[in-house]
Amino acid sequence: MLKGLAITPPVLGRISIGKVVEKNGKRLPEKDDQFTITSQVQGKDGWLLHPLNDELRQGKDDKLRSIPVRLLFNEPELNFRADYTLFDRQSGRPLCVGNGETCKRVTQDGMQSLPCPSPDACPLAKGNACKPYGRLNVVIGDDDPLGSFVFRTTGFNSIRTLAARLHYFQAISGNRLACLPLELRLRGKSTRQSHGTPIFYVDLTVRGGMEMTEALQVANTLDAQRQAAGFDQAALDEAAQRGFGNGAFEDSEEDAGAVAEEFYPAEESPSPATHTPQRSAKTSLAEKLDAQAQRHTPPTDHHQGAQHAPAQAEGQ
Image (cartoon, rainbow, N blue to C red; front, side):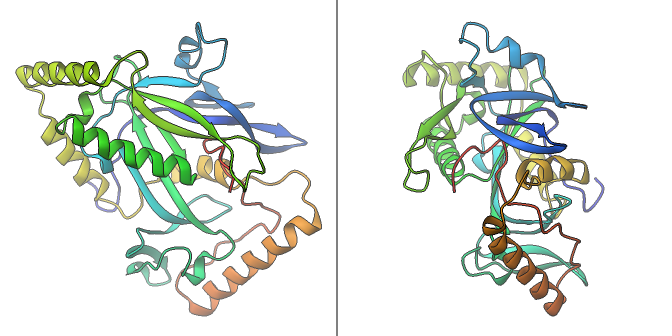
């Protein structure tokens, strides 16, 4: 494998909550109360819908709030990767990725491994520049057992819930996570920060209409069939682990544009009161980076906001 290039699961499309729409010449996130499945092809009006988007809506009153899925791997961390990530807000490229203990950071001297104090204690993370960032790969349908759809999120509720569910399902299934019939489900909740307005996050449950015992029986049966056919799940997990570890950052340059559009869209009509603290925070970040000379300081657009992606419809 090419060194420095992370080998990630093949992606057939994206799963998001909401979509990006064009308003007054600017592409902005529009929150929604349903899933949207898009392809990897982008048209003038945005990412083209994947055929599964319409197929799965049939009989659901045109609201896609659950998606039947399977997972590629038995190890939770291979299916769902979550890190503290500092993005270049303009290009969408990751500049620093850490786990709260150590991080990999782009500096003037190249890639370096440094301590990661987490965003609350890191001087580079001020102004909400660094945030939790999760990527979940799932299989939809039976056409391509190794092709996946990716859900990206910076929402605490989605990240915390998905991480917990994956570890619990792995435990109760006897490490047969990849064989369980599961379902992505959209849930709503109100928080103090949302002022009573529902926010939406993603949960992972057993397939709709199934009891847990039935899902476990299905997993056992599928696992036995795969072993009889010579399907080596342990080897697949090991290959994925090597692939992820082959590069410093998971997101490629091809993903950078989509990440920037999803997580750092240009605001439509910012008010001075709203943007004064954001300009101050970002200027402070740039000054720190320049003074410490720890990485190349990318050009920043001081009129960009720090709104969340359509794939993450949670409030702050």
